[in-house]
Amino acid sequence: MCQLTRVILLLCLSVVRLSALNFFPGKFKVGERGTNVILTCQTSKDEITWKHQDAHSTSKISGSEFEKVSGRTLTLMDLDEDQIGNYTCWSQQGLEDYTYLLLDKTKETTAFNINCTAESFSCTERIKCSWRSDAFTAFRLRNSRDNGNWVSESVDGVFSLPHSTDSYSEESERLQITGEALSACCYIRTDYSFFLRDIVKPANPNISICRVKNEGSDEQIIEVEVKPPSSWPQPQSFFPLTHQIQYENRHDGKLKTKEWEEGSKVKVQGLIRKLRARCRDPLLVSQWSEWTPWTNVSDSANGNNGRLDRNTKKGKKMRNCQKKHQRNHPKNHQNNKKKHQNKKQKHVNNI
Image (cartoon, rainbow, N blue to C red; front, side, top):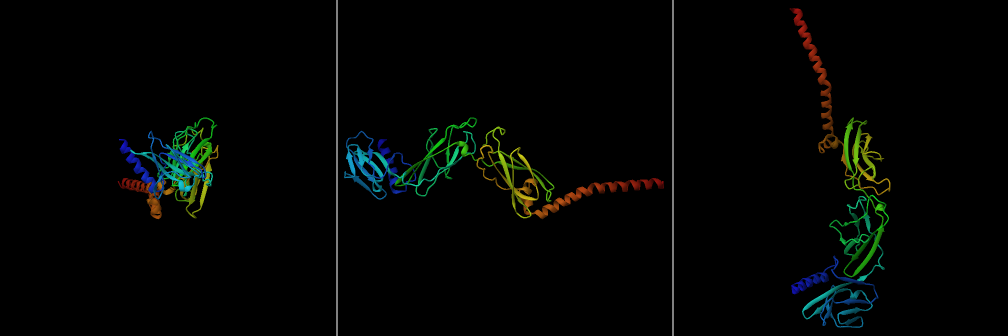
């Protein structure tokens, strides 16, 4: 079993050496340029051999002015980039330990910011962060305030960090997000602190069209309802939202906006083609949520999944025919009834 473990570890080390470092090694150490770094081989063996692997080759360390070997320890003097790489220690039985050494450029590198948002104050919702730089190939973040674990980015490049902030009490302690990034040679570390209330950005609200009056005319009135996103805390009286809708005029294509705070419904007048909504916290004046996808007014009013919008003239013609039929149907019925009564009276007179 021990021999199998060594083989697997050797394979992993080969991958690290031959390719770009796009993950965090299980064991690594960092040092600033010009400093001395001490590496220790975690083994019980007394006689060991040190080797250095870089992107091009593997070399045995026998000791020099810049590499001091003493038992299980290796001291690297006046650290520079040519000393960066994978250091392994070997006994007669095989590989014993390894340490990946990186150059700490935290003080040399221009800071690039970590950007975080939270959909609400609730601790059930995670903080979403983004952090990226072309100079590095692997990134990870952790919530240091809550002693959280390291989190790697997801496929879409987002870090989801848990937190323990209580949404029903005053926030007194800032969140502390720690970030680490590395490449094949270098490493940086950064910290970002904030109050949760400063990064709140609600998710998209839920928008629906309740009814449309005078449809198709310039006096058209649309009643729109915008409800909070499912991730927003309740009750709404304690966690209010400001809503904003944007709508496009069918005549000239111009966009207009309307904003309100009280209630979930609002009425908009005019011949409108489509509309969308967004929301934000009015008490903290938080960031606006992203806009919802456009909602087509004709589709929502008629439930035809876009058929009316593609055949507007045909749809209007059908509705006009229906209205004409509705107007004419009672009138024709009355005329027929009157004719029938006249015929009946005429027949009585003839008798």
